[in-house]
Length: 173
Image 1: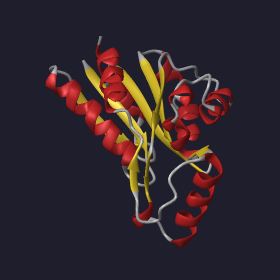
Image 2 (image 1 turned 30 degrees about the vertical axis):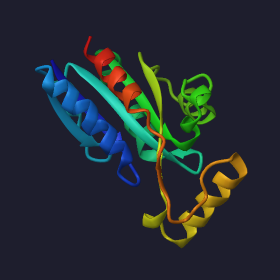
Image 3 (image 1 turned 90 degrees about the horizontal axis):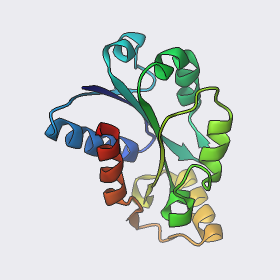
């Protein structure tokens, strides 16, 4: 099977998750191609047997390029097995890791005509030291309001890597 993983990442953590999924797929004998959402082509979609789209959230929104990609390639997505996953800090809470309980994923999916066959929500990663002044302080404010980590020197990975690996195996089943 040829798996195409299309991703949108802001700070690189979504790509890290994609690479873990790709490693599992390759270890089980599958071909995998990773492509950024802005550069993924119709030809890449046509050449794959299955497609996964992974996207991160910043300030409550997926990047506009993700929706544009999905809208542009809806027909190609619908004719092959597909999945979507979102990476966000709200997903740090186990009860917010489902499409129907995560407000950002629910809203995003509601804006699409495409209905992914499989949807997953992963907790994201907060890396305060790598953020600029504005992002660091805005994210700290959001975390303070929602009870998350606020130490500007901290790096916190909320990703349940067992969940990521289970998702990868489900994709390949």
